[in-house]
Amino acid sequence: AAERPANDWSAKLDPRSTFDTFVVGKPNEFAHACARRVAEKPASPGFNPLFLYGGVGLGKTHLMHAVAWAIQNGEGGVERHVTYMSAETFMYRFINALRNQSTMQFKESLRSVDVLMIDDLQFLIGKDNTQEEFFHTFNALVDAGKQIVVSADKSPSDLSGLEDRLRTRLGCGMVADIHATTYELRISILQAKAQTAEVEVPSRVLEFLAHKITSNVRELEGALNRLIAHANLFGRPVTLESAQEVLHDILRAHDRRVTIEEIQRKVAEHYNIRLTDMSSARRARNVARPRQVAMYLAKQLTSRSLPEIGRRFGNRDHTTVMHAVSRVAELMQADVSFAEDVELLRRMLET
Image 1 (cartoon, rainbow, N blue to C red):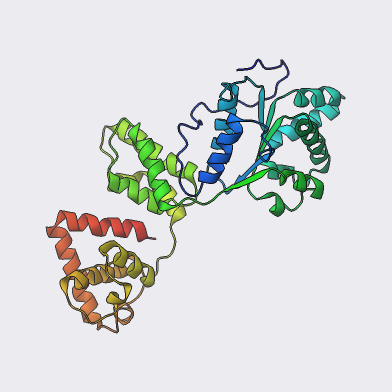
Image 2 (cartoon, rainbow, N blue to C red; image 1 turned 45 degrees about the vertical axis):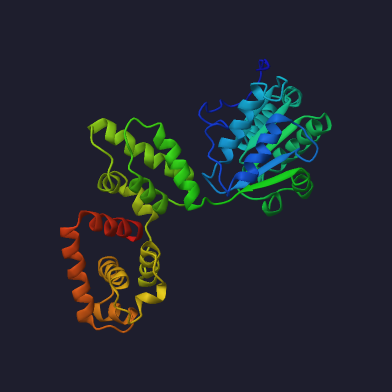
């Protein structure tokens, strides 16, 4: 990699955050493609600046580090000097330079880089002097044919509190958003991580985690790391039960009040029957059994009375619900596979 100046302020890069370890799926494929393009051909027309945005823990910082590693390692055929820092660090360095009357040194240091990467730009909102300095640095670098990569939690047009001229300049290159993850992407991320683990993680556990922890990839990976560490520490296998026990605090934070409608929908989906079958008069076993499971879960997971539950299942009598609850409990005792099925559904839904 290119030699760094003595006064370089670049933050340390995470060696695990490379393109090789970034799991690509529909929510992030465009941002990933843009990041790849910038890594291969920095300062390409239409890609300068590259502005990445999305919610917390969806992979913005991972992509930023991946770009920095690729450029530093000469992926584009040329060694370049990369400076990566958070917007907060940029602000603190600038304030320090003002205090020490060394603003010229600050300007020269930043304007000598080939690639400037600023993470979490939203921290500059309301910091007018720092925004002004960043604007001038931005212009000087782009005019000199240097690459700028920026990340934030919102798009440039939605970052209210940024100066209009800065917002306009940020939006004049390539703006790429990272959407919330899909179930499929979460499963892929967990599978990739589980493959490198020293203990076997059953697919049921991965499915459970992917259903329960939906908002934040960082938290999802952290949950799996904790499970693996616990299994290694105590020499026990990873199971649904151990996941529930070890991750109780994380899971409780993601819990929400479950409704009978939600239970019906999830059970119908799981057993591949129509949602209307939950309330229909059909008594075929392939419909009646899932309906009983849904009644059992409604009794376990909601505070609704038996007559209320019966009404939601096609105005059935409360004795029908009682029979369903006891029948499912009996079957769970007798059939391990059926019990695991119901348990998985319960854990996915439970409050």
